[in-house]
Length: 66
Image (cartoon, rainbow, N blue to C red; front, top):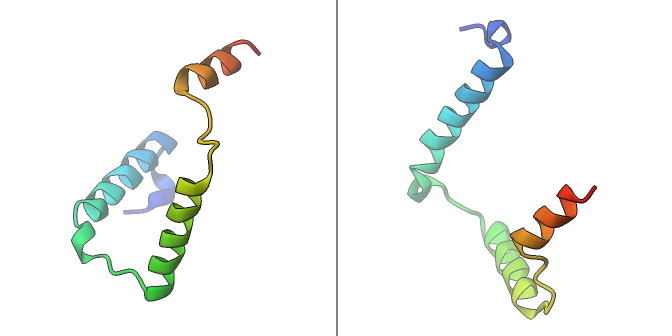
């Protein structure tokens, strides 16, 4: 298969199918100790941060008002 010969839509569908095939086997993906540590650090920072962003309704209203 020549990927370059596919349309953009076909390549997006292929990328989605490839991602789905990988994400369905998440138990086979091994993280390094450094990756686990970084994820833990980010999760801790998220929980400590009192500003959790905006709701979808707030974001949607902001986008639609422009």
